[in-house]
Length: 196
Length: 187
Image (tube, rainbow over all chains, first blue to last red; front, side, top):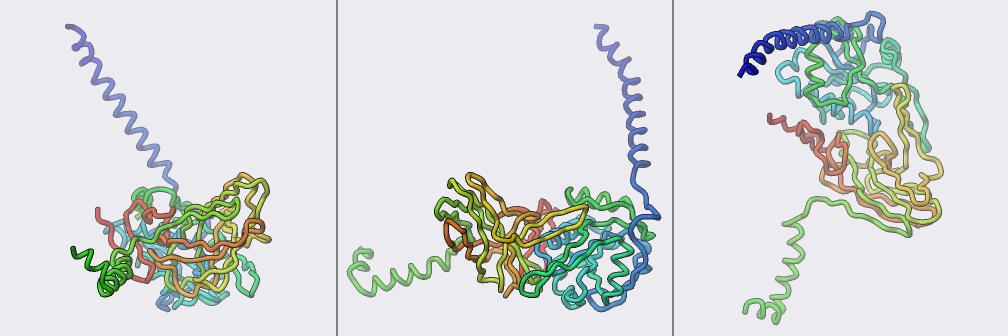
């Protein structure tokens, strides 16, 4: 008979301790959230998009963005990654207009704005493809610390070795982290929302 | 009664022939992957991925088992969809994607199974003649040094599909290979 009383007397302190723990935990999670680093990859670029419009790093200000470097002749990792980014953009729902996604070519010789436009027509319309002359692209690769190298194949064709990670940049254009696409689009979108 | 009449008349027979010819068109089954055997080589689960508009190359995948007692080597001779066909390896080193043709053929050791899959070994279709479209088939001729030459057909899955026949992703979005925009998620 006395047992329920003992339990009920015991419950409030347990609950309070639990809630306090939850509070501390969420504070830790919030503070441990990676913040933008001024020394990470990123910086000025002057390129043009798939519609031939000039795009610079200044145009990226105000919204966080995902950026991925690749090329349209890439059979495997590039379509996979662009597809996954498309899924994240979809999962953002109405917040999609508060974020951006860029696909910057490492192969401007073949990836003209028209080639990028065709290629991107299969992905989320919020993805912008950027190209430019060799010098402009090289400057962007350098700013973002992206490695890219032509590897000749027999018969004059070539593939590109290239850095194939996705960067998350904050709304000031500063590097936050490499973006993990090995999670559900919903989880990835939630992570991106943290920087809107 | 009618059946008997058909059997006994030429017009009935021609109806049967016409039906036989038309039925597969009406009830076309979805493109399906077959298994293949040549010598002691067993091939399962051929599939390819649809390519985005304008893409010059595509990738196809298979699982190869060597049930024999000696190693074999496979290379791709040709494809109906591309000017060249090669077997490539792909690796990621420090975030850098590297893709290389496998020189001298991909070795399948005795008793071993090699899986060609996204982000690994793949049959690389170089200089596509047309985009690979979801639901269609693509063909290659593979040559095994010991087992011989075989023609393999790959059903084409969605862009970004991680596995044969799997939906493109858990998001439930479907993409078509011919430039059309995607369906929206229905949540």
